[in-house]
Length: 87
Image 1 (cartoon, helix red, strand yellow):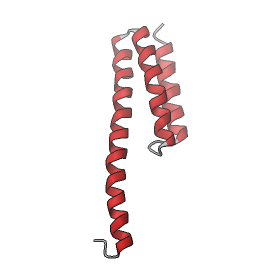
Image 2 (image 1 turned 45 degrees about the vertical axis):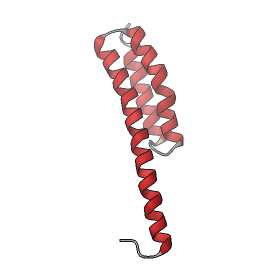
Image 3 (image 1 turned 180 degrees about the vertical axis):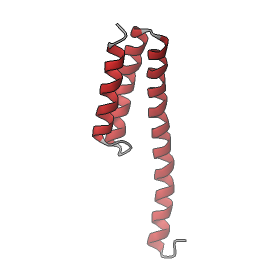
């Protein structure tokens, strides 16, 4: 357990950041799930629209430190190629 005032403060900050990061991660996963569902349904228009909504959310995860930039780029690339192949 934290003993010094500094370590107590860091513990409080970590709890706050954890909650914020958890919400962001959940939001990103929701957008990814919407794209996956649209791809599964076979509707290219809906999949394209879902991907365009998900892409900025994924990249925002990079700037906020939730995802690594290469991970985000890989996810977007693979999703876009899957959406493209629906044609």
